[in-house]
Amino acid sequence: MEFHLADNPLLILSIILISGTVLGKLVYKLKLPGVTGQILAGIILGPYVLKILSVEVIHHFEPITDFALGLIAVTIGSHLNYRKLHNSWRRLSVIILSEIILVPICVFLPLKFILNLSLPVCLILSTIALETASGTIIHLIKEKRGKGIFIKTLVSEVAINNVFCIVLFEIAHTISINYLQASSAKVLPLLFLPFIKLFSGALLGAVIGFAFIFVTRKIKLHSNFFAISLFAILLIRGLDLYLGLSPLLPDLVLGIVIGNFAPKKMNIIDSLEIMEYIIFACFFTIAGAHLDFSSLKIAGIAGICYILARGVGKIMAPTLIGWIGKFPRAITRNLGISLLPQAGMSVGLVLLLQKESIFAEHFNLISTVVLSAVLFYESIGPLLTNIGITRSGEANKDRLRLIEFIL
Image (cartoon, rainbow, N blue to C red; front, side, top):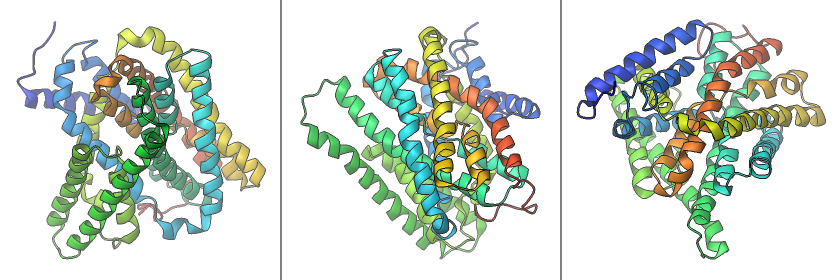
């Protein structure tokens, strides 16, 4: 039976929260991330199963997904602290370089030359494949109380990796739009456009970040800090969407500025922790509702290809470079399998495409492939990350508090 709830958003929101929370907790008891259960809840509520969340209803909750994306990006950026990472730049740079080259190539080639998918689909999927679920990784590290050179490398790798994921996605996004429009625009201006948007987005993030630090130095009450933190993310997401700048880069730069220049007590992530679970439960439940079963026939083959190719690239890049560079054995042996979880930002980048009519023909295929991969990697990925942390010998090395180099 189909429910028509478009005129009752509060009731819909309560259904989303209850379903996402309950299934998330049930799945977590099975030693899997709660995000897996939340996506499953969205699939069940969505337009292809119970039809409680119709396509029309899903669109009503775009502001929540936009805010959640901003929170994810700010969290990622806040982990890039130069003071904590400057001694590791050589090792991190070569691992990152190998990954941003190898992973997209591993995904692009089979999708394009074996499955013969369109160029925009191949470009978008190959750049999204770079993303690693920072929230899942950090949760597992806290749970295992990990600390040491491998843990530091893992967290830094995930944060920098996701920065490049956003940059390459912006370039692929611009090329794809031009390709779909069959534009006759000159090549040189076309190539400059992504970098102009990236620079403008980074500048916006830096300005709001330093303004946030200036204002928060003047306040004393924690409740005021919460309000300003909330305002900062809402403002930067709103301006980013209004100006059409690079997706999520302003938010990410905001996190980087706060993580490097704000006093330690100004932790924007901790201040928003009270509402973080609710926001993410809504985000992943709504994301799951986008899974289109009518696309599974072709996306099934593409999804399997994407999952296998991404796994090969993620594991091979740090393993090969670690062996060549003679990095510590804990890194060479365990980093690749620890980078497999994929979730928040990849889902967010897919949802950004939904707002552009030019991608309408390809959206169902892209979203189905990515959501299928998220379900797979958020099921098996955390198990492999746990193995990597344990095998590195750095589990149970931190005291029972927040990991010091993350803060």
